Image (cartoon, rainbow, N blue to C red; front, side, top):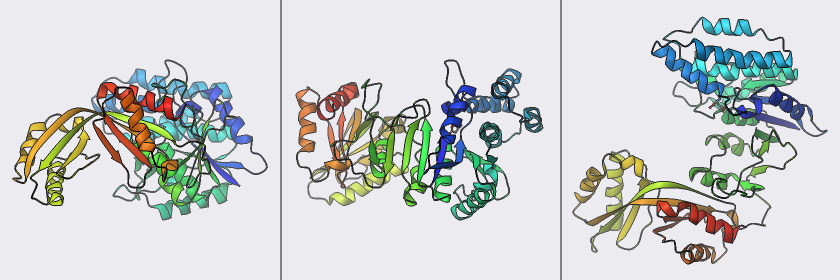
Length: 438
Ligand code: ASP
């Protein structure tokens, strides 16, 4: 069975990490073949390391503003040269750099420049593994509107795999029809890995990183947070949306559509089980899969006049938020009022203009603002049909003297969201974790 393995920046940060990758890739057992490998650019492993991608963005800024850039460029070259020397690779880096230098000018395209991190790292990895190198520009194809041309992309990836047998593809970028390089947003090598896995109908998409899977909550709040063994794509989406940073948000779609499970694994501890992300999970041992949250929200509680139609008032209020380009996160409601919860940063400069616009609707009686809200989402597929879970959560939070300002529950019962004061954010996560998970 074919496995697509993607290695993140910290997994390829230096020659020691390259060796770990080789050991993992070549440790194919009888059933799994890691024949397609996707890599990020050299990242951070030791204190003081910089990510090559960060340096390339910095290099671009220097070029653009005509600031001397020799130091940064030297740092980039030195990182690559060191890996080459340590691993005794034959790759002609001088030639690669000479090619790049041809376009090192004020007008260099940012996407092209930053993509060189993945490009060179992958060439080195391909040689080191004895795999063929496939340039992402030749197989990951964008349309001019920035969307991916999946049909063509899948076809091209499959063809290069059939031709070359075992391949390394750089993550993070592809090309428009005219060949111009386009990158994904930061962290986008995850997406490349997912696309390659879907194109090759892999049995698994392995995402190798520097943690042994997804934690049930933020380790900055719960030091020894447990690892999630199994999670569904839908739960992961909820957790990521609420702030858990795991995979690039656009990663899941191609593999989910092709029913390919994702494994999150640790390059530094390859025997750890990690986390598996699938459509359906068989693990019923935990009611709660994970807890995530975000601070700094503002809620507008809008009370309408009793006799008027609530839907029309909600519609007119939402029109106001949309006109001001404000992201609406939640709309919990009761008979005569509803709250619109938005990121505080979205209303930092126009709060009173928004209130004035809302109050222009004569059907609105009052607008009350609370600018001190943190949202915490408790996510779990096993909460469905289990009465009393929300009651328990509210009880735990209340018993710990935390004031709940807002409650929202997704209709598919995958998540329960509570809004508390920003200062209670960490404490709320801690008491829910301690009582319902630990
Ligand atoms: N190297 C790119 C970044 O740092 C892409 C990636 O690593 O996924 O964002």
